Amino acid sequence: MASYKISIKEVLVREIDVEANTIAEALQKVEQDYYEEQIILDSDDYLETIIEAVEG
Image 1: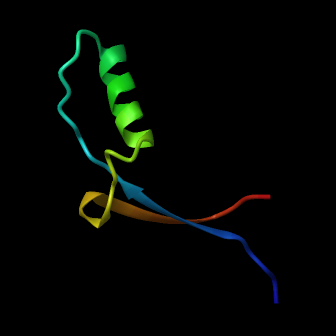
Image 2: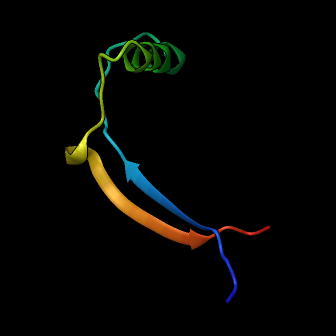
């Protein structure tokens, strides 16, 4: 019997409204909040599951 590697990915998505002067500033604000755990994605943000074979 052969052995295969299978990848399971769960995609979480949240859209956030941000007030900023530029798109770069808005991205920086959200990234900072995310890494400081002010934004935590959870099951309410679930979008899809992808199951696929891993090549190699």
